[in-house]
Amino acid sequence: MVNSWEPLYSGNYMKSKKANKKFDFKVFKETGPKTSLITDGTQQRRVTMNMLVSVNELLVLEDVDITKRLDYSSAIAVLGFSLIVSILRTFHVGVDAARVMVSAPVLALVTTHVLYINFYKLYYGWNMIVCVAMGVAQLFLWARCAAVSRHPSNWKLWVVVIASGLAMLLEIYDFPPYGGYFDAHSIWHFATVPLTILWRSFIRDDAEFRTSSLLKKSKTKAK
Image (cartoon, rainbow, N blue to C red; front, side, top):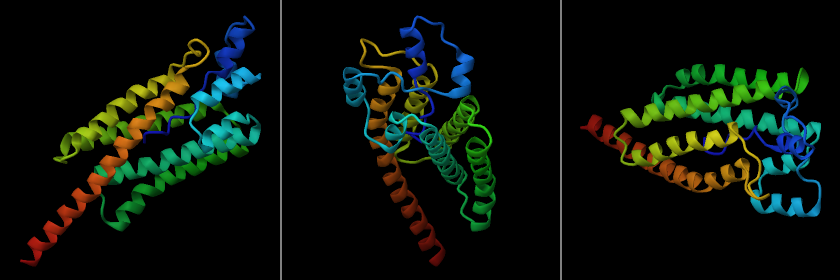
């Protein structure tokens, strides 16, 4: 959930501003972000300093058609998987048949979307809408889980949900680099570091909490 808001970047905005041209949002929505910001050695060093090394960044740095498709496809795949997990965990879906019924529509949506952007039209605007919708749905699901649960680590979940929602605004309402170093995208990546650590901590606590609850139920039934 934490690091799945990748489909936005400010390259087109910077290119238009540098050329003193009006930023064309229609073109940006159709084609997606460009990494034209990386044009000389100084800018490359700045980008390197402010980016976390990950597969996504490697795809973004080499801005060609295939890397765009891989970037968008991997983002929606991660979002689809995490959406399934959030539904199963929030509503305590334990029966295998029910899990399949929940997972199948989400997998169908993800598969259809990946096929659409890869074999029909690489439409950045539509991909952004789908990613944001799935991400927001997850935030509401985890918020619901935190609201109704008596989990001992509920505060961690609340912090991750609220902070992730705020961090998402950095990806949606982008701004150019401040002083040539820190833009919305780099701040977003910086914010995901502590959030990922906290999210991992919650997952560990949740596994222990769920295991303990199941053991107590099994002992009660045995008596």
